[in-house]
Length: 439
Image (cartoon, rainbow, N blue to C red; front, top):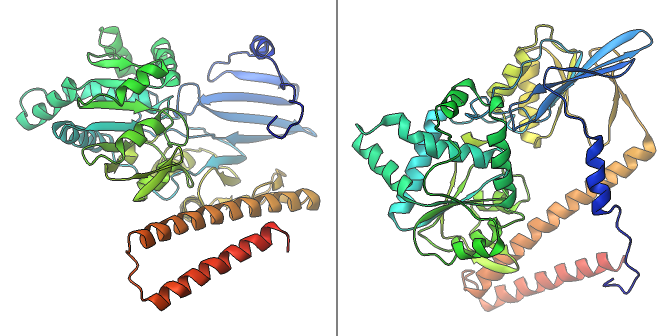
């Protein structure tokens, strides 16, 4: 419409979206589902979030059955609210995630202690703790962590109790409609929690409910949080800070030296969260440049993903090891590190497939790569496009840094150097213009 063209009709209506729910069929974990005479599947608890699944697929072709396992996201083994990921006994082929293929998480006790220290110090200084949190999983785990800290030490440890008292006196706001809905779903599916947690809930102590916990539903309530002066804790989505209400809370708190931004989940390359974690001094939010003066902390142990140790344990758990493993869903360094560990320790061949590659699961240790030249050309073009976009983003960040340095006279140069710098920037502009004009 901005281009003066007729609006495109919607792909589907709200009514059609609602009607499609009628064909959704819930499936229990551990239940073998017959898709047809030749294909069977079984969903197993992945321990990543409620309902997340590792799927086993049996496919029979020409009288021979081949079994493939797709892990999806494998859960962090010490997530308190969820059971550990299901270990699979056998498979011919495995397609496996590798998010933390080269890293280890801090263990549960350490992360609880770190959480308490960071939060209590910020609150004592009169600041706000902003926690960018994924709506499903991390938010509920942090609520549980806050609730359980009181049972860890009791009142005998004075220093601990002082920190805990500070924490408990501060209001905790969950500012995400999706996280609020997800928390209600967690409450309705407590049978999927660890047995210890189930017993606690039966005794009347629900870890997802405690004094001082507030849920902000409306946009007006969310805005009011940034007008308050009292110390508090705000959990808000999205976890990587690219969309949602969290951007407003960052805009109002990143520049405050009394505030703390506490990251508790994986931050993908290219996201606002990743930039902040990696030490950006300034970031742009809603077109406005915001100085990063707040305390930035990252407790990696709260991630919902298994670390390298537990990814390897998943591989080692096979009674009959797979013939071949494909590593997906990870950054290059993590994938390479995990590949080397698996091949060295488990003696299983590993492939890190490229975007768009197809492999034939032919029963061998090294499945054949099927090449469709036309498709591969398209995927390679797409991959190059992503690479160009990354390079443009890095260039823009560098240009912003240089602009700031020139404005604030941080680049100490003689007049001649300034002229040279100016000419180089002009030359870069010419090159960009040529590219845009296809010259």
